[in-house]
Length: 416
Image 1 (cartoon, rainbow, N blue to C red):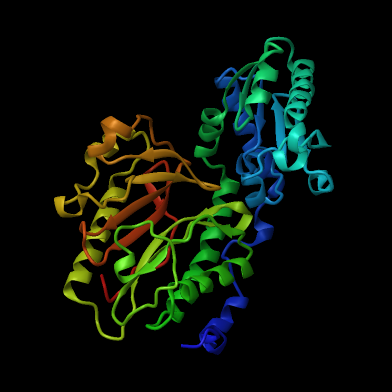
Image 2 (cartoon, one colour):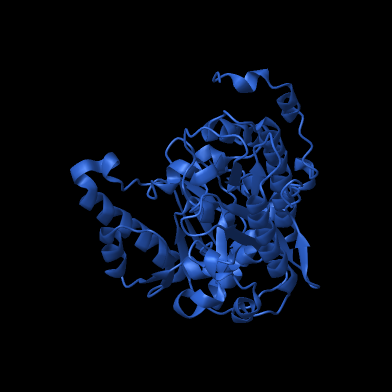
């Protein structure tokens, strides 16, 4: 098959006209950013943190709304960072990009960052780290006084030593930020619904393009094109596979060609509209014949797991009780189970992780489901050394009464 197969597909033309269901005008982006910052400061108070220094680009964006080169910044943590106290928020932006955030109402000041990566300083790195620590330490003490307790993320050892030498008590920022992110504001729910709507249109285009003979990479590219055209941002993973590459899960998309009548499974993992995650999984049948009985059995089993686990979710439920009441995985599928039963979702995958009962004592932790949490309920069904498998996942909102299903893409009728 020629590599320009997509150019000949008339049914892909419609993805240029995308109705997201939630328009960009409906989201109050000022209220969105300020609501998230309020939640961060609330968790800072609870954790007795005088300040946060954040350099994870997703957390920076969550806390103040500033977005810039998120994938690049994910591997260059020294490039941009945020200092936040109860009274002040100062963004240190990459040199030349300071103008991107100067209109944000959440920020009191935008300064140029001091890059402490090796590529920017070479053998001068130790000196640059000492200077960074001196300047940041002095600023923190100026803002909140001597002996402050500060939550931090990824800092180089030289910076840690320099800050501690000034009497600054460093602790991990993850708990405060993850707890803030775990409960969504009404504006965040609007963003999530828009992101899901855009991604569902892309999955529909992918499903329409599916045919034997395509490579998994070619099919995967259809989803990328639609999501970017609809205002989405990037994909965190490469999880679309066909046939024997589905099982076990987590093999990355490849140049394998889709064979007739194989299953094709995908996990979206899209950082979509407004920077919010659209995370649902579907499994399709490539045709042209009808699915085999064993393929339908795998699919219906996965549907059963997801449906049961959504049905038991309720506000006030403990993580331990969820693990106890969740669907029991048959022994023949247990070895290749998905590593969590459900997980939090917001701007990326996030707190909490809800573990299977068999894994709870070793890996699990307790907590409580509360209204405003958004979760992805997972299933992977495939026998150890089995040829194929089925991946399904739904995104839901915990409400005062139970759950609201957020991911609306239909299941595969021929398999269900």
